[in-house]
Image (cartoon, helix red, strand yellow):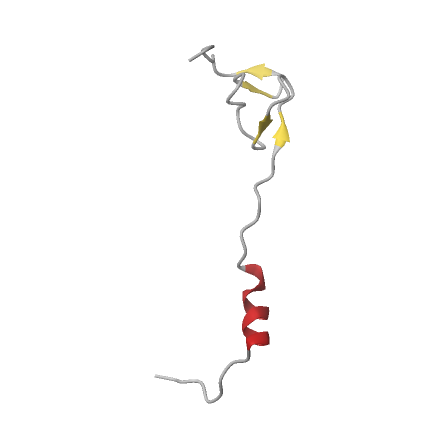
Length: 61
C-alpha cells in the first residue's frame, strides 16, 4: 500500500477541500401566492405550479 513520503501542508489540504462546503438552496417566490418555495416544484401553500393548479390544498389544518 502506498504511503505519502511527506506530510501534506494545511494550505494544500484546505485548497483541496474548498469545494466541500454546503450551499444554501435556491428559493424563489410562488407566482400565485408569493410564498417562498424551491424552484421547479409545486407550491406547498397553494398547490400551484406556474399558473396551473395541480394539487388541492386544505385550509386550516
